[in-house]
Image 1 (cartoon, rainbow, N blue to C red):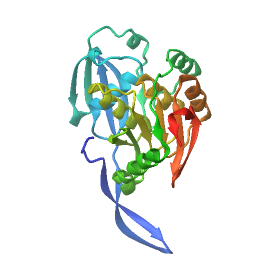
Image 2: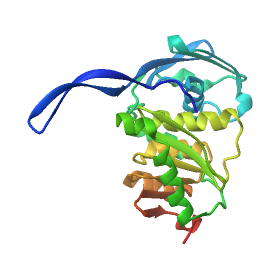
Image 3: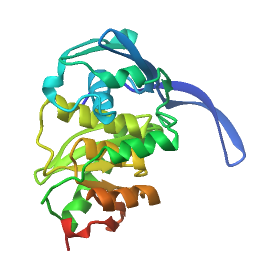
Length: 263
């Protein structure tokens, strides 16, 4: 996980109990990151500083532009300028129809229904026999919360992490939950980590696009402190993803494929 500072102190006026005073508070940073694919400008993302290569690779993976580590020939990054260049080892016909657009940390793509339907139809159900114990899931979510120091300081970040039976492997924080997930999957992709026995941990809502990212990375288990949407649940049932949400204070809800949870 990157150690780049993702917040700075700012002077504000605080008010409470009928009084006001000057004080300093931590405020999250956001930066533009422009991604070039095979010498063409692909998109600009708004994100937290750091882990730009992981974010860019995770984005390409989530978009279905790359599927194997060997698809990536080279990566070059100018972090101070917010620029990343990626070259692939084979043509990427998708880029011809990939409209250049500005992506925010929270609303990445502005999809139409047609785009979404095409995405989901291209996906195959995830095959995995992984099983996690109920108490182990609660340990995972507690560790995610305990490691969320920057969120506790700023209250302006999302967290995503990867875990297996050995515990939390790594975690990323970002202003956008999509970005945090892409950083996690980008790192796993670059390191060619086997995803069959992994669990994606989230601090925020499990939306349908998050679920599609998990499917493309072949992750069959998602655990979150927040809740899934109805569409995410429907897709999870179809694509064989276990969704566990509202995990907090010693409890959680299982929304799909409960056979992967040992009670």
